[in-house]
Length: 449
Image (cartoon, rainbow, N blue to C red; front, side, top):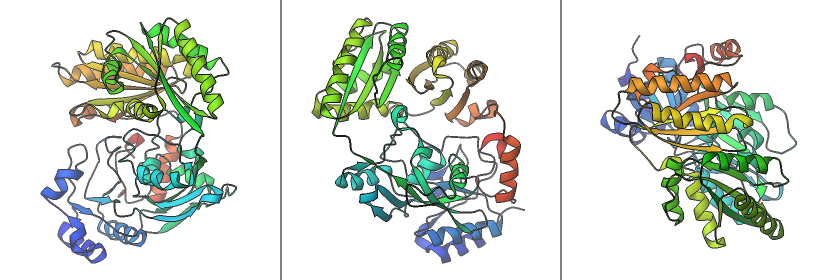
């Protein structure tokens, strides 16, 4: 039965206030998901209001999509239904901060950048560095399991998340995990909601452990004549005692976009490795010398950034995927670290096959390749076929290809997730138990959950 948006709007206005509920053009302009426009947008201001909104939507049988900073809304398949967007931007407060024990609890709508501005005052950081970090919210960070180049040294969300509060699809509020580093109670429940994409409930609060700010940071880039030379250098780094925070690969198309941001003259056809280093001044200085020598010995050219330029340079490195816009297609290809170079080359070839420009980057020591395709004049069917072949190659290497962003026409021809290696039956049972009416982000997750 179709949702009665008029009656539901009246109830949502009672909960959050008339000014915090939108519909029509106001909802369509900012909150469409894969071309689908929500009937209503509600902006709760407290965690209790989130619970009441969810309870009202569930009672009306309305399909809900949680919305943080919007940076991962392209992830997943198109919604099976979309009635209400629950926008979390008003939940942006710190709940508890314990600098002495390096722990912080904040509401899910708080921006990662805002948290960093706060914790840096006590010389601590949350070392998660996804692209578009100034827009990413803490709830979205967890729900989409977003990460960046720093995963090489620091890992991903599950390595830093201590606990969370979640509103389940029936409106019940639950608490998973704890607020101290040694508390392991509820850890498995934490893992359930990491990258659940809002299909099991809406995250309203998160608790993270923090890390002391490194005494010094530095960045450098190695410019190589071709990809084989760059990947040979990667193998040397991984087999050495060098311990970078991050090691990023750039193909020629991606490097051409990056170099102007770094103030480096164009180098047509070149590939690159960017490295971020952290630690004591002595350790960082030694690693800078070692990396410069390694790049030079490998036939490349090393460029070290001045201390006052290093932070801005690395910001350009980790946000490169956010520069182009429009009808782009962004794919994440994961596989064994030993196959990262081959998968990066396959992604570049896929772009050539369908006449697309392919900006290919990789977390070179983590087995993750990012391929940003800028479509050319050929029809979407050519790109879909190229992506299917690329997915087949990734899955043959015991990896995967996930569409992080794509136009609806591409998603109609290619499932966003691909084959799921085991556990799909369990995930469906969990979905049925947590969300029997299918009102939380229906259809967007693996297996159309």
